[in-house]
Image 1 (cartoon, rainbow, N blue to C red):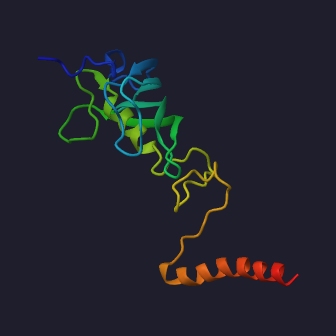
Image 2: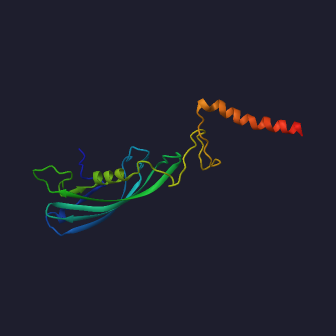
Length: 184
């Protein structure tokens, strides 16, 4: 049976347990074991996480704080082009000593497991509507072409009830031009 406390996100805290004021700092680089995020952007399996973390002993448990840097990938929500952006997230959580209550994070066998904490921080920081650039105009609603690569003028969709009038305005200038040439 595999012990859940021997993964790459598990840090020992035995030397600072129940010694308020003691602190340890760690720098980790960990490849994530699975894809994180279910939306239009996500962190790919195997992407490296650069984690700087500080473990501080307090009366109630071990206070874990730090930052994590990684890169997410996906597609622009406006133009559907591939995007890759870096993301840096700060996190802080108290891993409480075991007791009668059931806190969110518990110090287990004098170790802290950062995986859930880091995963939640990263996934919650991913943008809901990512864009490749702030002024991305998106796609032409009629042709589906990228507006950045077209003439830049989006054609208004024609209401079918007005299509007959549109045809009249397009054909009249041509017929007028024909009459004026014949009269000259």
